[in-house]
Length: 441
Image (cartoon, rainbow, N blue to C red; front, side, top):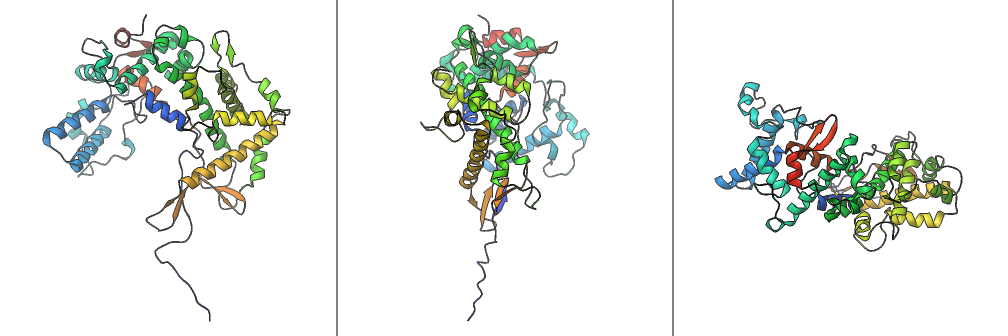
């Protein structure tokens, strides 16, 4: 007798697929360092008015005794209003749009006329009012009405945030004349050279060491992200167009590798140290540009910087950013282990191994995120790369942008507070900024 089995009816066949964030999980050390070093500053916006908005909403909610649901509704209505109002496009040299401006929906009504919005125009994003600016300056720089910082009057996050403003301000004093963005200006002062130990302001701020470790590790994280995105972009879709075997993916990077051994590739890297401290090898490599091997070289530089003695202990601790004592997948010490294993082997072999390591790490990360989908009763996996019959295909491309450090946001907030300015295309610290942040010695 033959029996047909159907069901269970509540579960759909197949595996649910969703796009995953951070497919190699290499971003953690930088993201954790950013959370510690820039508390209270969001990567989402550069506009200072959101800080005063949420403070005003909290005050009103307390005054009126609003419950959680009412608080959320008030916040959403206020954010919608801010997104609907025109904002001062001249308040920033690189303006950002308000939260949700691309999908604004006014509560209770589909349309609100400009005439109705006009009375609220003073609440639009842009340059804050003087009284608002003064209050926010005191809060964000941990100072009193006389612009004096008394450490014991402020909590740890307040002091750390003040340190971030001071370090950026001093970097602008030293290198703002170059006309670079805030992040590159900070790198010039903190990541490379000897200013972290010889400059009287930077050397006196304990958080300076953390910023050096963060910015140096940021190069390795960016290299992994770009390398992975380039690998995935070479793969076709599930329709069978240009799907790839693991060997074809190994060949993709190996064919871009130069002839010779890994030892020779290391010898060809820019110098990492000089008489005046760390040299900008990472910048030099990025300025040269080129194929995917630029990112491989950046990973090798990061591995060499991870060795004991290259960085001071406090810098190295942030650079490694470990959550356990041993090497972690794809971290700089992992790459250093590959250098030791492959030193006398062809660069092609190392390139192929890096592809294998990325594919394996991508699978580990995807499986760690595997979840039950309550809508279907099946499993849901978060990944853009999948394997079928030993051939890899993708459901979408991966992002290759650098992860945020909140430095541009910090600089923009400082400008709106009147601490920083732009003159003749260069960033400068204002007179009030020097006094408030104590950037002169």
